[in-house]
Length: 504
Image 1 (cartoon, helix red, strand yellow):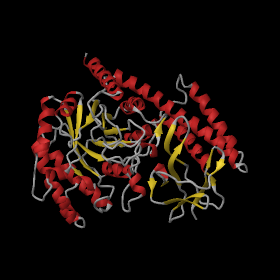
Image 2 (cartoon, rainbow, N blue to C red):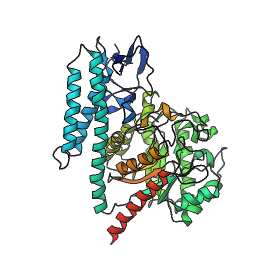
Image 3 (cartoon, helix red, strand yellow):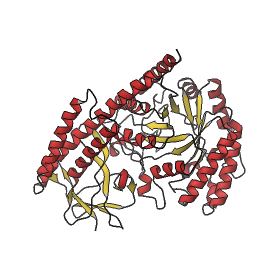
Image 4 (tube, rainbow, N blue to C red):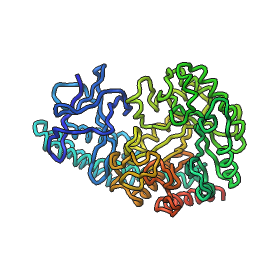
């Protein structure tokens, strides 16, 4: 029996509804395989095992924005649940959990949060008290959810401010503010701005760039970048070296899609050649990514862990002074709800640590606000909760790609060639524009840098020349600075001041 929900909008039952970015949710908010569909006036979530399950989907919460929201896990029953009520219930439950995790219950200056939380609780309690008036209950639940999301973002910002102050007092450690390079852009102005404007540059190294044909090893394009960044003394975070996604792999590797041992040997040899060439210039290596997704190659769980172990050990032996990172490109785990045989990102990261893999940290990509598989918008509270999940693994985190759109509509110049419309993937507060993008950048950097285990945060796109998300750059396509650049420079200067104060 599926878990079913009635869906209400503005107090009216929806008889037609198209769930977007919808997935089944298991324990610990892990997205899991399951059938989510709307039929006969109900949103249904089906699992073969018939266990308790929740649903995550894109949901308009009012002025706070449109985000991927989730319900509590619920057992199947004949009577449908009220989706609006369950979305509100989960957010309040999560706020209670994080207030405890962040030790904010008795913290000074939190009285205003307590008052707003009590009001959100009152609205939800009133909604729960009207089981026979689902329309009225949905209106109350919507009010509770909208205020709860705003409250949770305020709590996340307050918590970030506290820990930023602590990090400032401690000198900010090794925090780096950077940007990712687009190696497909052949423009000297682009290269000069990137090399001279950041503490660190994330330099992608797709396997297919080095070896388009089996036996090839073309280093020309990467050599130019390495030479420029080294001359500017900019820290280089390179990779992923082996990224098992179709767009990064040479075509000839797919001959071995059913031979994991040969694939592992080829990957090992490739890493040997790349790391040996650049080991003196690279600060941190993103060793491998995509192994847990089973997009391009089908690996068993044991093969994923063993391949990770082998490749990380190879990098550590060749470049013992550099950091060896494991990349998690879709940390919210949307792929796990779709790809059979995949492993959730949190489980994979935990098992890599527990299996004794000698890694130095995790590299996370957070590209939000586009209708790609992993692009549904999340609020600041959700971003903070995700980062906190990695804090339990005892390793540093590098955010190697943080992105958000700079316009509400499609962008013919982006990597999707205009196929991605941000309006279909949510929004943060207002519809996307250059100023909203800048505000989100500043807030998200604060959330990330407030975590003492986060050692670097890099924006995904320097310019609007082939950005990963529509108008995602810090500069436009004519290299005119956008508001986001000013905000990032302010953050970079602030971190530098912390580090200077520590030295003195």
